[in-house]
Length: 80
Image (tube, rainbow, N blue to C red; front, side, top):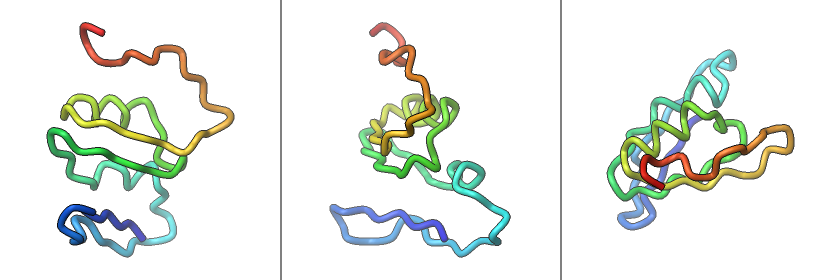
């Protein structure tokens, strides 16, 4: 199940019940991202590609720490 809640309007922006074979990483792209959003996610969604997609939409993110993930560049945005 994938759920996204807009806490300002208290409405669901995404709600889907998917097959067990669809894991978090493969479902991550379903979330619509807007300029200025703050995306808070569990570590199952944590990929460089998804982080770059969020940054490309000029949004920010917080992921739960994933102990085997290596963070080499904390300044992914252009010009930082």
